[in-house]
Amino acid sequence: MRRISASKMEKLAALRRCRYFANTGDEILMPLASATQLHSFLADEMIFLEDDLSEGLYIIRRGSVKLSKISPQGRELVLNVLETGESFNEVPVFDQGGNPVTVSALEESELWIVNAAAIRAALSEHPQLAQTIILNLAQNLRMLVSMVEELSFYQVTTRLARLLSSLSPEQLTGHPGQRLTQDDLAVRVGTVREVVARSLRKLELSGAISVSRNKIAILEAEKLMEWAHSPDGDVQ
Image 1: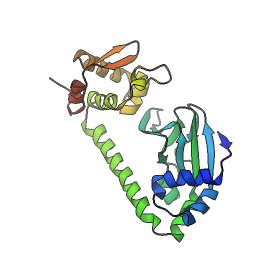
Image 2: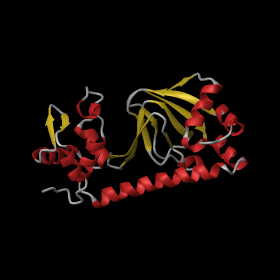
Image 3: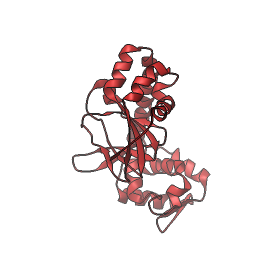
Image 4: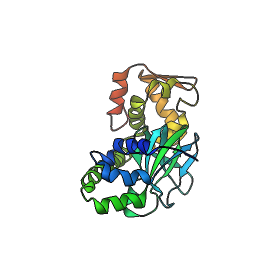
């Protein structure tokens, strides 16, 4: 991690774009800008660990990060992948507990960090902020409920088809470093590499995709979507 110098105007611009401060006046944002710092992280660098004390709200200026949970046995479950403009780690800002997830950079990234105590002070002085904050926390809760539903009710092949449908061509067939590996796919759908390999083979046999030299090409998008909407992980 390396701290980067940034002007107050740059900080204000970043806060104005953040969903938690939408339509917020500069009289509220100016003190928050003074409590905001910019840091850079290398690819694969740990940003923070689960249960550590939170520094504040993170806003991605450039790059991408993954939010994950690590089991006692070391197995990783990726909860979300966030990119430029998105924010994360709001829960400990408001409940003052530890970080709920582990976060690491997927590529070279720059992150704004808005001090947690400064955000709580702004909320105390300007209760109108609460409406926007509550709305965004509610949206996060809906996302987590949907994730629980997928893990509980849908087979790996279905989850994998949904993931493949959402990925960019670079993530499927790009250069190493851009392209997701089978291990990457496994952690994103909450399973292990061997199970993903079997599901990829099933999708390939159906004609939905082809797999060659660790690259995945979507041959029939409609067929892949049939898999994505099959709860039992089977398509006739």
